[in-house]
Length: 126
Image (cartoon, rainbow, N blue to C red):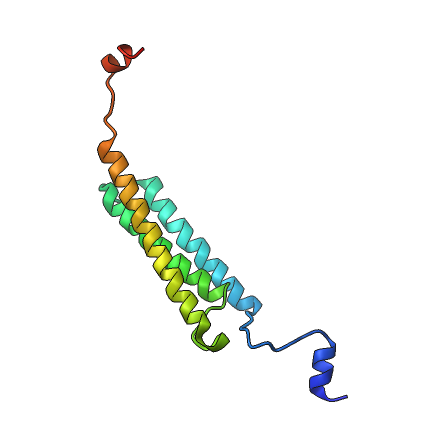
């Protein structure tokens, strides 16, 4: 039995997909924890006085975290699967931009169009 047949007999197949090592998963996990803890700290301490600045910084950390997940956990790169992962990356980036910009647009318009009610207005409601 050849070395390749023995390799296949043990259930390990080289199917062209990138597989991560324990170290790469731990790097991805560590980066994910850091990229979650920093925005949490920024909000809890009120580091930025302007809410728009805080939102933009948090969105930036979110985008970086998505890229970290795609690289370290989804193993997306330009070499594997004949370039299809690059198409998946572009598609993911387009969806992220649409989702983040749409969310910000909806939240801005909800905040702008919702009128606060005073106690006097509340007492006159049926």
